[in-house]
Amino acid sequence: MGPADLADTLNGLKLFRPDQLLVGFETGDDAGVFDMGNGLYLVQTVDFITPVVDDAYDFGRISALNSMSDVYAMGGTPVTALSVLLYNCSIGGEIIKTMLQGAADEFAKAGCALAGGHTVYDPEIKLGFSITGKITNGKIYKNVGLREGDILIYTKPLGIGLISTALKAQMASPEDIKAVTDTMLMSNAAASEIMKKYDVSACTDVTGFSLAGHSYEMASGSGVTIEIDSRATYTIEGAFRYAKDFIIPAGAYSNMEFLKGRCEFETKPDNAHMVFFDPQTSGGLLIGVSETDSNKLLGELLENGIPAQQIAYATAKKENSVIIR
Picture 1 (cartoon, rainbow, N blue to C red):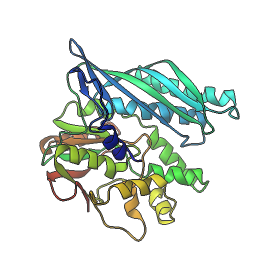
Picture 2: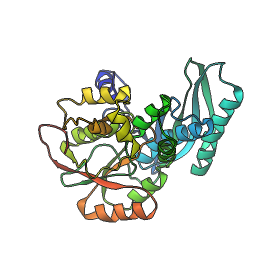
Picture 3: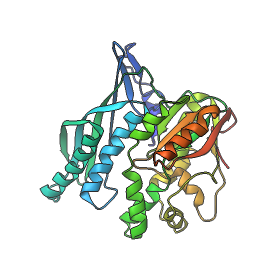
């Protein structure tokens, strides 16, 4: 069951829904937002991942950044974190400590306090965090609200899942491993702060549902169609090589299958199209901004070392919510 399928299933739940809950799970948004009064909004999210790199310290860092990214996508600032650690006794205590130290160091950079957590036995290591954040400027960025004519900017290269899969298969080159690790270790904090200066209508972070999947959520929830320019998207170079060799994560096929009839695209003989359905870990922010402000936002992102690109635009609703050209 994919994230969109789960959202459809959960729509039948009978829930207590006070007026103060400003953002729930109805649109599959990145985090919940609760109005605490006096201009303070509480932002809450939880996420965990399996190891995507071999280095325990970097894995902890990536897990922390991946969890905080949902708060940044909403325009919030992380305040506290609780760990969710699934492990088994074959993993040495020093490795677990190293993972958590990596996470703790990233939280320290973000000014987010690691306040505790919970552990569960599991055959496969998983690490993640429940993050509580805050919004104090009254600006909540949802994954809906995109307007016709808006430009979409994405702040990281694609291909993370393809290269991570090659790494797990011990087929990734050292250069590609470094490139994908560096990409996952890029925090979305700076991009989140920069976007607040501009006429941004919607934002989401791109994770397991892929660029095409998260674009679908954004487009369908906003009543528009997103047209993606495949030539404008920036992809980690090695990803295309692994796609051509059919080293493709299972999640990419699941994403593509769900999006049939919702996303228009051309199947490429070399599997280059799979990059758009590739599950991302610690992916970038997909930001919808007015055409007037798009170049200014892109310029400031680039000036701050963020490898952003204008990759798409929103049009009037068409038969498909997403079109990849």
